[in-house]
Length: 167
Image (cartoon, rainbow, N blue to C red):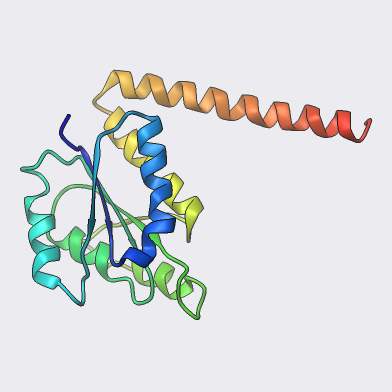
């Protein structure tokens, strides 16, 4: 099956975080592609990737980058496909610089911005699934099941704590 979500990162050093997006997409049986491209070191490659995304069948693009983190904004400027930014915490500022540069897009260039790091990468994949679920009833059903399982895990953890502490 052809990929419908792109996972893009600025460097292979971002892979430990962005692997979390890939794992979650696999759990939802969403085909995806992964690319390394840089807003600063390979701007033409980045623009071409974004401009060709729709014709390749992508429905969403998850973009992880650290530091100055212009990658998500550059991709969003070059496509009409939803872009989901994941700030990476690989700088001396612990990802705050990435968060601010990902979330502060100018009017007309939206980037849905997730939390910094692995939680953001997981949520980006879930958000991509939700975008797909707006026009795919089977995906919407998978998401509903996921939410039920999420709730069950909280109840199970609560019961375990009560048992462990005899409360």
